[in-house]
Length: 139
Image 1 (cartoon, rainbow, N blue to C red):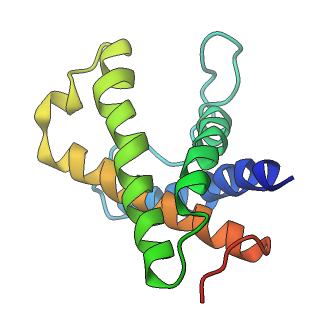
Image 2 (cartoon, rainbow, N blue to C red):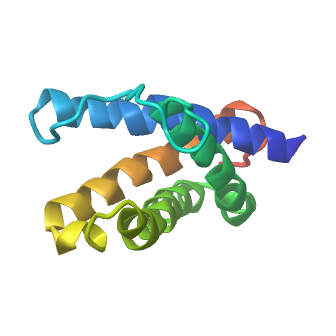
């Protein structure tokens, strides 16, 4: 049951934390595309934001595995760092090239920092979700 909770935490963290911060970036003019993209994705035609949330749910599993025994500030720090580094590395070095974009967004520092910030916020969302679900010992 704890792994289902971590999937749900990752899914919801994508919609609330990742897309919430992305919304702020978009409102501030830092990114060109609006949040909560509903364009269909290949191969099943699922809206992009739902696909992103599904992958966020899957990423919630290893992040939870790495943060589950941490307490106090270490719990939140691990969630932030693992959330920022894991999904960002995969996006920048695997997903971007598969989609015909340059590796690491052409090594654009704003793209790299944006990915780290969005995914770091997502990682904190996973930690918060697991704490809310009663699984985290944060004290």
